[in-house]
View 1 (cartoon, rainbow, N blue to C red):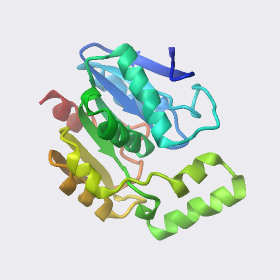
View 2 (spheres, helix red, strand yellow; view 1 turned 60 degrees about the vertical axis):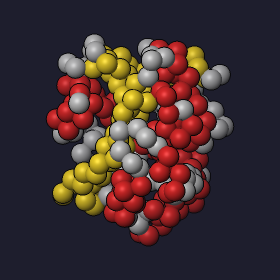
View 3 (tube, rainbow, N blue to C red; view 1 turned 30 degrees about the vertical axis):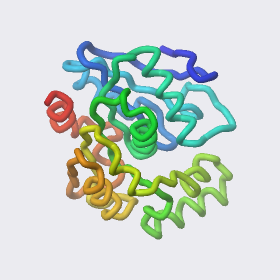
View 4 (cartoon, rainbow, N blue to C red; view 1 turned 90 degrees about the vertical axis):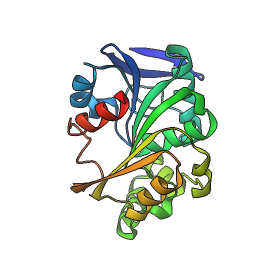
Length: 219
């Protein structure tokens, strides 16, 4: 399925019935990373999984910024679920969720942020150097995006009053203090660190988080 919003076309899937739940993928991915998870979540929720601009089958543009992508998702929600949604965002999808929460808090009823960062400096040094090397080699603007954005000051999160679940792998590409700081700063956030997992092993093509997400969004 697709929809025209914010001057572009977004590809998305819609499954199930119940309260609306939007799933946002990470950098360089598409909505199919959630296929197994969505199959379970659709038993309780109307699940929308979106290809962000410049990803999957959505429009390719010259604008890769998180703030613009957040505007796309805001327009998507307003068009299809104007009463607000639950949101689960992985990595870049989590960053987009934060921008939405900061600018348009009324559209998000609850959110789960998976492997989210606030700044490029949240990368562990070796991971940052890898991204830098890949950008130099490929000139892919998606790598450039990670080297330059986001730039969200931690203090801003104190104003987010949305019930939130912060999830990360024990061996994530971002420093653990990134997640603990976010969870401690947001007034209604709880933190879950998954032992033995890296940045995406618990979410890409996995339904591992179904019990936690189903419980969190059903409370």
